[in-house]
Amino acid sequence: DEMSSSDYVSLPALPGFRRSNPRRPSSAKDQSLSFVNGYMMVRPSTSARSYSRQTDHSVVGSRPLTAPVGFSKEVLDPTDVSGRYSFRRKKMEREKGNIALPFCPSSPLPAFLEHDRRVLLFNAYYEEDVLQSAIEKKRVHPCEVYFFVEDGTIEIIQTKQESSGVPHGVYLRRSKVIKPRKTRYEPGCYYEIDDLKIGNDVIIYSRKFRIASCNESTKRYVVEHCGWNDEEVRSHPLPRDQFAEVNKAKMRRESGVPGVERNRKMHELKQVMESMLGKETSITDRGMFLENGTDALCFQVVWDDRQRLYGDIQYFRLFYYLADDTIEILRTHNKNDGRHSFTKLLK
Image 1 (tube, helix red, strand yellow):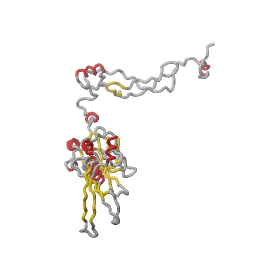
Image 2 (spheres, rainbow, N blue to C red):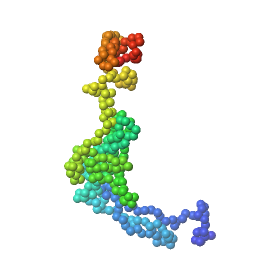
Image 3 (cartoon, helix red, strand yellow):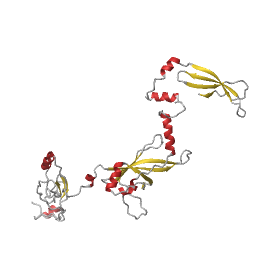
Image 4 (spheres, one colour):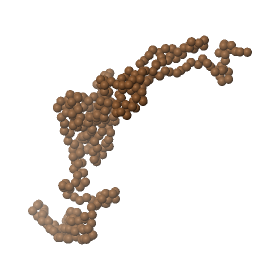
């Protein structure tokens, strides 16, 4: 016996109890995107309509679908956006050297094309308090601020200082930075190019940066396109950093820069350690060492210090080493002279 429609509906939806359901609604969607001049563009929005079949087995509550959109006409000019610009024609235009853009010649260029790879460089610094130090009270950290014109993003890189004891590098990765708000209800806004004028203070993540200068290309751009005057692009000097000056003078003495009075010789152990690490050593003095070895000239010298109060005459021995032209002064001790028996006066 054939089953009635009511018996068929009353059966459970389990495998083997029902045949294939022909009333299942279709969930297909019409295409709403198209290629215009080789770029993916959204088709004009159309009114959605409910999907229903004009049959005896209509389904109530089916999902509304987008109305089908027919194929647009194929255009011959790449600047015509009223139709479809096929890949075949795009390939032909590329072979001829023509450039197809998804806008008309009269329309303005988008920001990512007009300011492509245009980066403005500003030199800035921030000060950091140094506690419990007799050498310095504040330390100046120079930085480079990069402003990307195409999207208004900012990147900050700290300038590396030799032997500063502070890890330098990228302080802020390329991103948009929100200005600090005075009140919690004030809407936030991003930093723009006019906020980076020379002499302005920029607060980024609770750290105040002072814009000190910019390079020549940045100066020309802001004067021509942003309307800055000469006072707004005039460079400001960096504040004095006492620690950097002392450290620079020390490294000049240690690195052996010619023309710097060091008044001391590099320690022998330091020279041996640098040679073990791969530093090349000079061989100009090795011939003198092989020729003279440990030979030295000995002189008896006298220091007459009787002009001063409680001064006395003291006797020393001066050794002049022929291998490296160095001098060593040793004191001659006498019994019961009432002086400390130090070994060397000068090495």
